[in-house]
Amino acid sequence: MKFSKLQATGNDFILVDGRDMERDWAKLARAMCQRRFGVGADGLLVVERSNVADLKMRVFNPDGSEAEVCGNGLRCFVKYAIEGGIVDKVALQAEPLSKAKGQQNNPCLAIETLAGTEKAKAYMVDKVTWVEVNMGMPRFEPEQIPIKEEVDIMPVLNYPLTLGERKLSLSLLSMGNPHAVYFVFEPVVKFPLAEVGPQVERHCMFPQGTNFEIARILDKSRIEARVWERGVGETLACGSGACAIAVAARLLNYVDSDVDIIFPGGTLTVSWDGKSEVVLGGPVEEVFTGEWLR
Image (cartoon, rainbow, N blue to C red; front, side):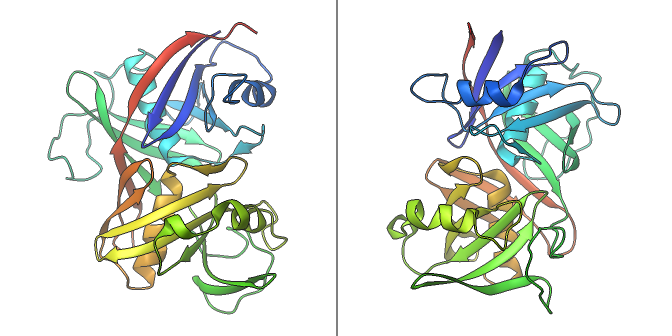
């Protein structure tokens, strides 16, 4: 089985064209994503046909669970689909999502996910180097995140959560998948994410688990962050996590509409005016291609 490995700010994925293939994708993800015995990746992305969009993307975590959506995965998916000839870039719509790159003639794709249909725009020189994704509207209703707790005020900001002797103030929302954002005052490198991340991810208030982000405001346009991804563990970056951080920070009046989220793997740009849809942008590159022999 042929595959490609792509990365977006250190968030790496294995991509497979599964349009004419039947496999146990969950089992395959568990095998391929292992970094010692497999290819090594934060997830397996499978291309499928769609009746409502240009293509459908399925996302499988290293533990075999299927995720609703993945922002950086979507950006890798776009590059893979265009450069691999899965879609005809000439025939694609050329409507820009934003004016961030100032060009008007770059291809746009509509991609079906479990969280809905997302629109993405590719910026090209000879190859796709940067991709923007319209991640849709953030969701704040407890049943849409989802969380079990009853809350009186939405959005849910600075929600108290006690883990033993540690107390967190979490901002809770969904970007098509659940997120819990915790703002800290010290550099994020000092936070014990490997200890706290699994506790938040699997806390009983999150019936489907949650992604957990820690973030520190640097100024009105920059935030440094780390992320513990549900079903994955700590990753070098997270697209939907960057969106969740930017939305929460904007609601708390920490930042302006356009903000750079600085992860260990690189910087992602998020635009949100507080009313409309969230747009995520960042670099993307192919690492290698190969064949899976098992």
